[in-house]
Amino acid sequence: MLRISKSRDNKPKGLQMVFSNGWTVSVQFGEDNYCQSRIDENGHVSSETAEIAAWNDKSEWFKFPSDNVKGWCKPEEVARFVHAISTAPKDGQPMFTPNGYDD
Image (tube, rainbow, N blue to C red; front, side, top):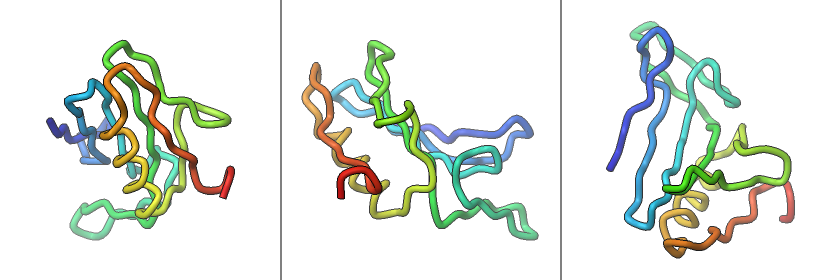
């Protein structure tokens, strides 16, 4: 399932993906997120980076080295994160090394 996330003033700011393994990925790039978002004259939001997070169906968050979310992620890192979460075992912890920590 896909869900669009909206800001307090009802502007789209990202999305959530719910996978069959019970994990949900959040990719956010709105004004209040840890990213480089821009809003053009037509109200379209775009960003060169995004904030990522994930949690399972028991509300247990994926833990980054310093927080439950990681900001300023480039598209390649977002794609690797989505892949790691979507392919994690149902009751297991996803295998993911964020950029800027161990690479």
